[in-house]
Image (cartoon, rainbow, N blue to C red):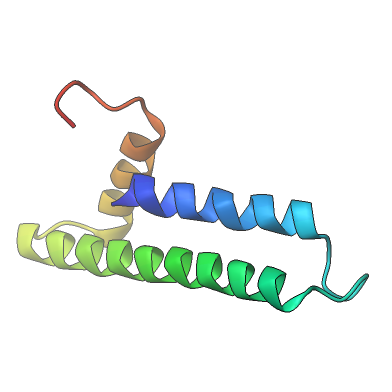
Length: 83
């Protein structure tokens, strides 16, 4: 799930780069819709990751920040076969 959130965030950054700042030149309705859809996908995935991390840490009696750091580290490593 964290990998999906990372990919969604990358997409948002790519769109910002491609479209430029909306204050520099107004975006078209299509650009606005595309960006907002990507941003909502990232936000929702990030929220779900945070909720899962919190629940797991609580269930396992672990510090939330430690679990979050492990998840973030694992999400930047190449997936192992079968993932």
